[in-house]
Amino acid sequence: MNNRTKKQGFFLLILTLGLPLFFSVQGWTHAVQGETGSGSEALCTSASYDDGEPMSYAAVEIIAPNSKLPFQSGRTDRNGYFCFRPDTPGRWKMTIKDADGHFVRLGTKVSKEMIDQK
Image (cartoon, rainbow, N blue to C red; front, side, top):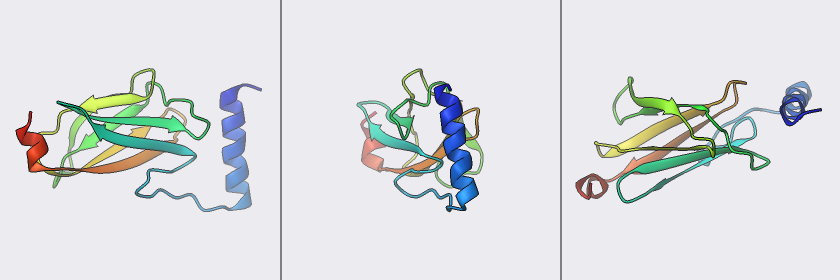
């Protein structure tokens, strides 16, 4: 049984038992986790499965504050990382989703000082 099949079996077991699926500020959903952090010129996010395996080449959508349209979209790298340069202060939203439907939603606040440093 390959690793992907094991993950799908685990997911089906959770659904069968009726455990609630959830996502929260910490970024947990469908046994997926993520983090955000800022570098000198970019805001970076990472995503991985609960076993530590990175969400390689997962689809990423970035939404700017007070917007419904994507600011940027793309894919994580092979290590599950994605970086972008925000241009507006406020709360930014990120959704990272793999081909199997596992996803994580993250949010981070960007300050005016972070924008001015760039």
